Image 1 (cartoon, rainbow, N blue to C red):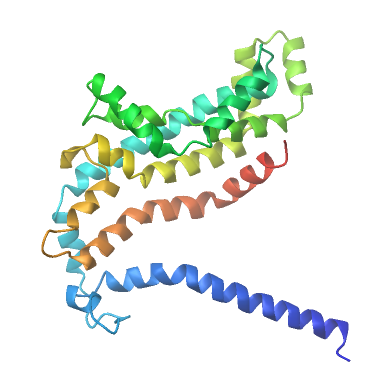
Image 2 (image 1 turned 60 degrees about the horizontal axis):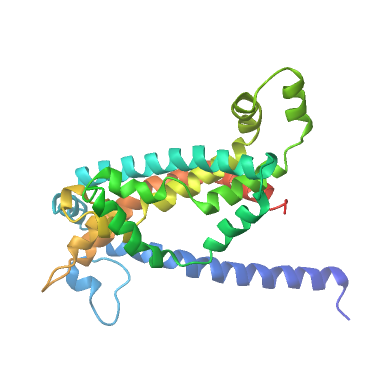
Length: 278
């Protein structure tokens, strides 16, 4: 009979094989995108599929950037992402703290109603949101881009869970020292919630950076678009330049990859802490 240690090693080996195969399947599309960004258009569309480029076509990156207003759209994307992130961090933290710690009539009912809205697909709200933005005259403007995303129910729920996990004694000590609700929130509780704030900030920034549907509806002029929308302009009526799409897509993803690698521990710890409270 095989020993218990041998059986454990076999189980671990099987787990490593499964995880390795799963990891490779997840990374493979990115690796192919990297390879295809150096190919010619004919190589990308070849059958059977060619996995490696014949020659490294660095000009795909140069031509891709120069084919559309890349720098204008990069600025729009950065401003759009920063405003949405800062706004959601502030407003979701305040709302989450109110639902976690403050007392007011119908608090639980109000929170339950807000959570129920999460069940509604966002696409159903697009028409009403578009009409509001149109009536305000905010089409093709940064105000129209950021308006629907200044606060989110997901962020409110996440921050509420995080504040529920902080000790109440800290607030009571602040009140004994004469601090008001605003002082307790901004000077005591919000600094303690920094892991949750960091997680929310990273998640919101990455989501905003890649947002497509709402910017596509609101911005019709190329100089007002974000990069995620602008890259769609590569799809031509008669021919699509796939290597340039791959190249520009990689450039767009790079800041998000660096951001996530730099802050992944804060994101994971923040989400784990928030998930411990019901």
